[in-house]
Length: 342
Figure 1 (cartoon, rainbow, N blue to C red):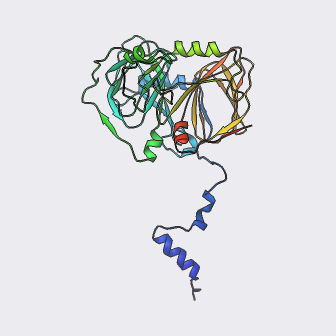
Figure 2 (figure 1 turned 180 degrees about the vertical axis):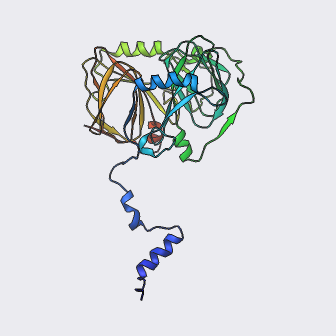
Figure 3 (figure 1 turned 60 degrees about the horizontal axis):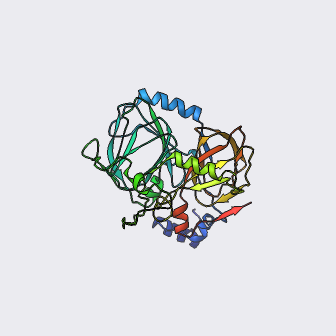
């Protein structure tokens, strides 16, 4: 004889069958601090270099790019390097063109190797050199081309996971391989690339920076000029690429920064809400992330989840330089940004 079903059990069966759950059943999800599923993870340049080499013969460039997406092993196969960001390593061989398209996720490029290839953004051909940082704002037609005799490699950064989470994904392939290149080459740099001096006759203020190219020459000069300053005890000499007109972030969803950890320097640990992806531009060092050591060197890419305690230590004979992207503008706009400085 079956035991009678308790009223409590009948009630829970009723609500579960109708896609409801009691707060008392799920309250444990209200955690005292962030507990991201993404994990700290490192892609070594020694591996990425081999991937770049083999991809050049294994994967043709057609409608899609030769871009190797970096999936965080803690996110169960999601198209994500952190919970809000995706990073990738993209390769373009001499003579290749990556077909023009546009999408609602915003993108950045940080050039790792190769001189003189271009990204064309809304008709402006942007010529790229190692260390250059290039914007591809949301819903802007863009294509990539390599008219040189060098293989060109860069890191992509996009807000794809955030866009997917908001159900705001749009994508369109251009009818032509190349979009129109009718604007002056590096035209936005000629107009807006003068630091705090901006033209008064340009009245439009887009959410993204109108400057498409932040050159390595200017970045390296700024780092050098500030090297003797105290800097941040938690980040060393840390600079943010800013909107050429407003001084805010270059994109509404992504903050892009570059930092110098000077020879012999070790920073204090900190935690912040929001996730980041780091690329080592120069030097080598060690970061301890949530108690786990990561020894990094030039070319490595590291995923840093939200609220992960981390520090930086220079372990080499030269200054170390790291480029990073983060979702901080979103956190700040929503009032979710916090930091814990040890």
